Amino acid sequence: MSIVSIQRIVIIGAGTMGAGISEVCAKAGFDVVLCDVNAAVLERAMGRAEASMAKAIAKGKLSTADAEAARARIRLDTDTASSERADLVIEAVPELMDLKKQILHEVSSRNPDALVASNTSSLSVTELAASCRNPARVLGMHFFNPVPIMALLEIVRAEQTDATYIDAALAFAGRIDKSPIVVRDIPGFATSRLGVAIGLEAIRMLEQGVASAEDIDRAMELGYRHPMGPLRLTDLVGLDVRLSIAEYLTKEIGPQFSPPPLLRQKVRAGKLGKKTGQGFYTWE
Ligand code: CAA
Image 1: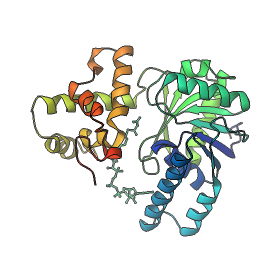
Image 2: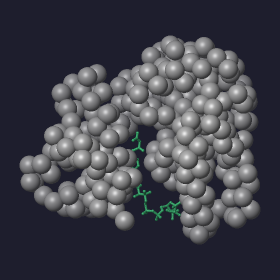
Image 3: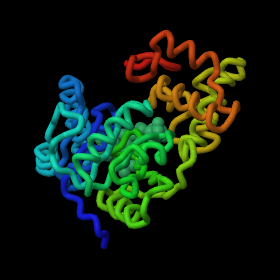
């Protein structure tokens, strides 16, 4: 049994990931405080969680009573360093190192005994941990979109992380019904490094006129059994998110991650994928 007893979870950042993580934690019976500076973003996140749970009910994956109980376990808070006591803090704000450091510093100072996790998809967890009150308790918990459906939890061990807290994170993964992997803290970890490499190559192929977006995606869906082709997946993740990870990996690993001009051009045009209605595809 883990020595870290988790009951209350503070989740900071109510974007797509924060909303999904809140839903999954509340369904697993944890008390959740979802924090964001923007009250409208918080309301939208709750709406997303409710819509997702309604879909889960329709698919026979959740009872109405359990959905209502989960909904009641989520509290919204506009203080990003929530004054609520937390056993586990999960930070899911945008991929900006300084923003993450500031938030993690504040929240870990208020909760010196909590396990502190960042949902970063590629930034150095070691650098994030260094900004915290107790770096030994800090690690990466990388969730995947859509969080209620995706089975994986990538646990990232920072240089400072104590083995006890990796065990606690593994136990937590079991409680939220996710299958964990543990990776060393290197840029892009396992998932982003491989996923971004395929996504960027698909965009370069589109630039070179190798095939249409639909056919490039179909190649991987039917030829490699990927559930979704790399261009549609880039639309789902967000082109801006992919661009910022690619820029970071170029700096940290090398030019193979250099963002293709087409990706930059679409981001400049505000075509960020599903969330804006347009990316490599047009979304309803
Ligand atoms: N809650 C719970 N379960 C749900 C659900 C919900 N809201 N919605 C659907 N499900 C269940 C369904 O019941 C179904 O379960 P069974 O297989 O047991 O029947 C399963 O989830 C699939 O549901 P659908 O049939 O509705 O969905 P689909 O088959 O069209 O698949 C998809 C949708 C899961 C998104 C699939 O296309 C997929 O896996 N795409 C790839 C997603 C991916 O790669 N995500 C990672 C992105 S990278 C990332 O997030 C990290 C990063 O750092 C950027």
